[in-house]
Image 1 (cartoon, rainbow, N blue to C red):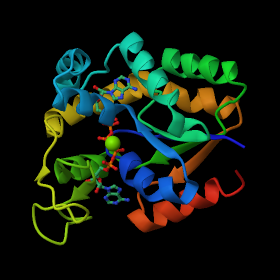
Image 2 (image 1 turned 120 degrees about the vertical axis):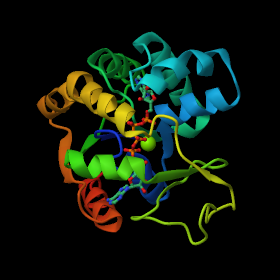
Image 3 (image 1 turned 135 degrees about the vertical axis):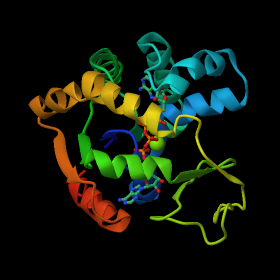
Image 4 (image 1 turned 180 degrees about the vertical axis):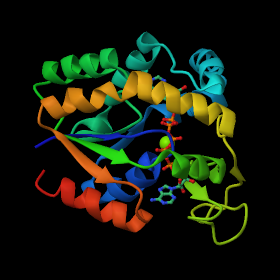
Length: 217
Ligand code: AP5
Ligand code: MG
C-alpha cells in the first residue's frame, strides 16, 4: 500500500527534524518544498531566483510555481510508494491540486500530522537554528547542538543560518501561517485523516508520538 503523509505545522515546529527521524522508519521519500526552493536557489536556477524574494520576506511563493515544482518531485521513481510531505501543501489551492494529482494515480492522503507548538517557543527555535550547508540537516544551538560547534555531525559540512530565520521575518512567516495555512487543519480534519501532535515535547518524544500516529499504515 502507498502512504502519503503530510507534516503540517507552523514554521520551526519541527517538520524537517521529524521528517529526518521518520523517513527511514517509514521507508518514504522526504519531499520538503522549502528544501526544494533552497536547492534551486543554491544552484541559481530561474525558479530559485524567483522564489528568493518571497522567501526573504517570509511570504509564500505563488501557488502555480509551488504546485508544479512539488508535483514534478512526486512523479519521480522514489515517490512510487508514497512520500513524507514537509511544508506542502500550505494553501487550500495547493491541497486541492494535490488531492487531484493523487486521485489521478488512484491514491490519496493517508494521514496529516498536525504539530502544535506555542508561539514563543517557535521564535526561540528559529533564532537558534543552524543547518548543514551540504546536507541540510537541522541543528539548534541549545536543543540539538552538533558534537563540534559549527560542523555537521553527519558529513562535516559547515553549519549556517537561513536568511529568513530572523525574528522579524519569522513574525511574518507566523502571520502567513495563521492566515493561509491553518485553514488546512479543518480541511483535513473534515476528511478524517488529521491527528494532533504535541510538538512542545523533546525531539525524541515527538518522534515517538508521530510513529504511533502512523503505526497502522
Ligand atoms: P520552509 O523551509 O518549509 O520553512 P517553514 O515552514 O517556515 O518551516 P521551517 O523549515 O522553518 O521549520 P520546521 O518545521 O522544518 O522546523 P525544524 O525541524 O527545522 O519554507 C521556507 C519558505 O519557502 C517559506 O517561507 C516560503 O517562502 C517558501 N515555501 C516553502 N513551501 C512553500 C509552499 N508550500 N508554498 C509556498 N511557499 C513555500 O526545527 C526548527 C528548529 O527547532 C531547529 O533548530 C530544530 O533543531 C529545533 N527543534 C525541532 N524540534 C524541536 C523540539 N521538539 N524541541 C526543541 N527544539 C526543536
Ligand atoms: Mg523545515
